Image 1: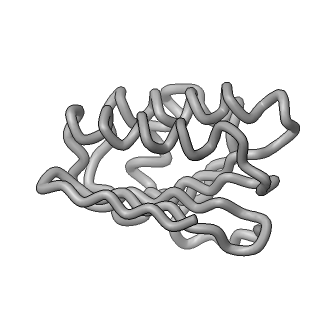
Image 2: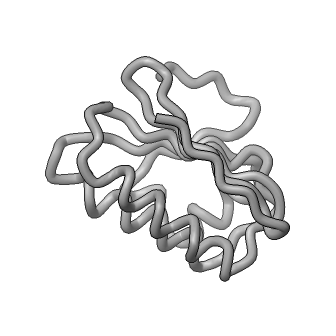
Length: 117
């Protein structure tokens, strides 16, 4: 499964690598674009076969509540299936995720950390 959604307000990509489903957001994601991306991401992650969902926020320019909502909604839809979420992020985005207490439900890795997926 490969999904690519373009917008003047950012890009969203979804692709599979082994047992992981990657969701990559790039650029400046506006609230309207995030809402559009969320609908498609939620639909595609409802019945996934992969054991791991990786949000790749390394190239995102900012964070908004809609993006946080995407993470929470995906977590809600996969938690009963014993699947995990990991987030790859730059330090300023990782700090926002920690302030939002999302580190209590997902694993957050900084851009320069080695991640064993």
